[in-house]
Length: 144
Image: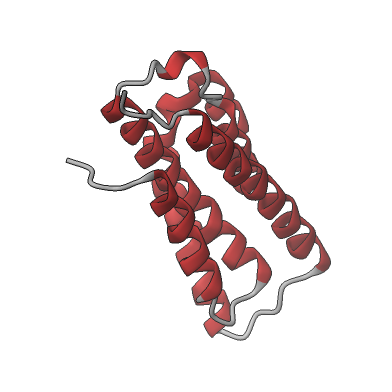
């Protein structure tokens, strides 16, 4: 049972962003994509809990876009299976994060392509975060 308010999701993101450790841009961007995937799922559960008809206003392609940016080699799978793919590709995303961490520990430096990819992922995460905030505001149910 969720006992959170819409602002709790915003606070969660702010806390994680404020605690960003020193990590290469791509590693942090992949983690951000991983995190927003779960925040989105929790947001959808919260919307259903308060009784709002989610079909009317929740855009479902935001997470797809984030995951496609984070895992371009899985683009066809994500596009074909939409939100059903999320449960499968978050495992792949987790492995990519761990791979990036191992490479960082081994002293590998990220190239310009990795930094550009990280920027694209972060932009998609920001867009989805803004969509969640807007949708939270429109889903507030005022007791009457």
